[in-house]
Image: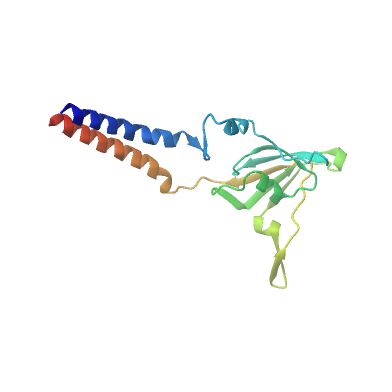
Length: 179
């Protein structure tokens, strides 16, 4: 009787702690990992140590939003790639580029440009799609990938399985105690 109780208790604790270990992960990195903590600041350096670099910002539905130091001449697609790519919730038909006023480079007023990703990368010439040179970033540019959260049933599967396993464990424990 006591042996069954110990086995049921051990099984219950195992099943109870199993979902907790899966919730302690974020983006494939465990919380407390030095790599994860170094990304919390939101500053990323992709600059070329031998060349000219510029500061730009990447916001919205990308994997790593924040401030970036990138080589001069980088494009919008380069910046999105540096940021880990768009998330599944991103709306690639509505990419926004804000260029603040900067007298030193000849911008005398703030500008806001809207792009469709396909228009940035592809152009159609006589019905044939060919690759297009996309827009080069300037110092101080702010690129925003808009989007809205989407619901996927698989997102709740982990929670449902965790609750189900706890309920089964409690049932087994109750049956073991009743015997």
